Length: 509
Picture 1: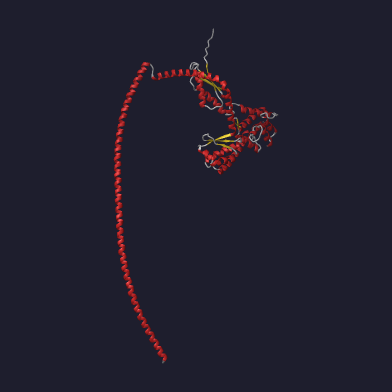
Picture 2 (picture 1 turned 135 degrees about the vertical axis):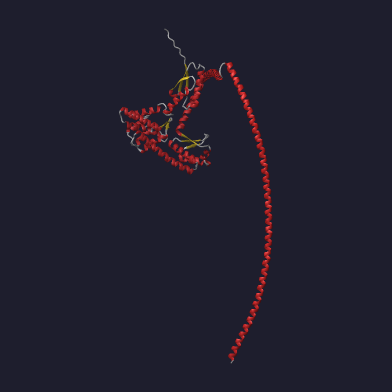
């Protein structure tokens, strides 16, 4: 019975608790709903308020933007109006200037027409005066001009000739006093020319600014150049040129070629200098070898020690009194061969000895002694036969001649060096200089013949006796000498002799 009662009591308790819980839940849910409704109501009210505020702010911003835009438009309109007024004013000024220019052009045209009429009147008056003068003088204007000029020229030539004769006599009286000075000056000039030709080369520059780049900062470029080439680089006041000085012709040629390439390249610094100098040395060595091989081919020599071929090529960069050493050696070789052929002996041996006779000049700046004996030692060292060795040693009589080849080479050397035009200038330029000298003298009035003699150091001019008097020939000689000085280049001096001779021949019967 008790358990049933407990169970019933438990069931009643559970039911009562459920009813209480349901009541409390309904009450709480009702409160929550009321609270959420109030929150929604407040949110709607706040959103509406914010909406009204944002609309108000947007209207105010639009109003402000509209005012700014209207103000900017007004300013732009005002600026456009000012620009239009300026353009109108410029157009008015241009119109005014155009009217002024047109007016001036019209005035100039009118004045030009007036001047043309006046010039025609003046020209008409001048023609009438000239015609009147011609009628009075009995000759035309050109004839009168020719007569006047001829008289003035004859009188001037006579007076100038007399004055020149007087000056020549005065100079002749002073010549004894100045002779020593002239001789010393001539010797100095010859010595300078000889030394310059032997030891210096001149390299042209595009501008004097290049000298500063060649020297470099604190002289580092010029020091590097002199170190790598072994040549002195002289930068002086000579415009657009520098001088390379060295007694070694091959080094000087390497330096010249290197400097020309550096100037052309424009990049001048120690590293670049070293690179260019190495390339130039290789190029010069190739040129030397090519020159030696070409000399072998030209003379018909089939075999020779490679070092001798190289030394023959080095002669290309040597000169003696203006005569290229390699060209001179080739000429001596050919002359020796021709002489040997005429004598019926070995012409090949003679050509070989002639080609090698000046081989010592390739190294005479490095080895002490006469170049003939230096060449003898070189030929002997590189296996040349005794006939060739003796011919090389004896061509300047530094050693006694022992064979006919010695005499042939010596004679060929003398012929090559002493023929007219061999030294200082080639045969072609020598003949051309003589022809130019004679042609130049024949351009003067009254000259009938002109002869260049003494290898171009003297010219004798024959004049017609009836065209010039004794006083005028002094003026003619002076004019010819001055024209030679201005139009020709020549060593030493040229003596001008003008000859005027009148001959009268009769026969006694």
